[in-house]
Image (cartoon, rainbow, N blue to C red; front, side, top):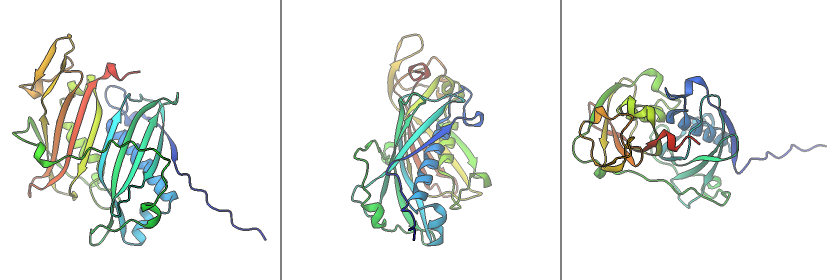
Length: 288
């Protein structure tokens, strides 16, 4: 009598993603939003193998909520490129917080980026945090961590925003949990960064702290604050301090160590929904 084969679950989940035409920006590189979607998809697929898929969680009135994300990119894939994402849970002895790390590599098996995330398991009805199941809290990790999580605090946001824009939460922004998809917060934040600047610069570092949920029909405010920066412009001249007219930032602006803070708020209540930090560098420095 044959026995049922034991299900083998990889400690590290490995998945390939091809960059499609609808996943790139005007420059021909994969957008930061698309890369974050790849990370979420890989995490979701590994969670399903661990029997913690969104569907399985919903049947027991539980849900995953992304609380923090930090991404560090060394180079960006282009249209038609295929990248590989490796991901694994990281046990840190926290009963209410789950961690997951990622490594991104190109077709030559060279590392192009890494990421770390922190998740909460909530009761889908009460929205109260739940203790992680023992199999996750005590998960045996592969033995290394990215250790790049860098949460933001409201106290970092001082003065007036350089750019303020408003957005209506659409039906297409809502995810499986009936909340705004995590990537939407990044999209709103980046809309406040001038397009000319984005064409010649890429995000090298991204940190997001998700504070509260967004609901369909609400209006959100995206604020962008320029941090003090110093670097070299496209003509090789040193630049220091703040750019006076943020809307005029163009292709010859600072090409490294350019950082912005982004705050997403609900307009009616002024409730903070997410805080973000982006650090940019010139595309030529990341085009390997």
